[in-house]
Length: 119
Image (cartoon, rainbow, N blue to C red; front, side, top):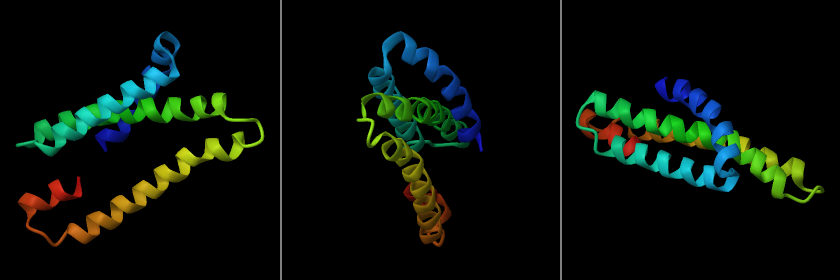
């Protein structure tokens, strides 16, 4: 749940950041922040470190969710703009579905390893 809450704050920060450094660089920053969070979650030795990784990942997700559709709308030709700006939302939902499927597939593994593989 913390990821969703923090992504809200990341979205709020994304607008100001894109105004100051541009949309392309904000998406690059979002990718770096998200990958940092993923790396922290992968090596987490306890729950607090895992939550710290989720915090970073949430900020990165919030940045990306806010900026990607705007950037796509700016660079896409007018004829394809509507369909291209809907792709991020479609792929986000598909990714969530794959997350649920993988969680179910790996749920039978031992508890000390299954959450790392799910990540």
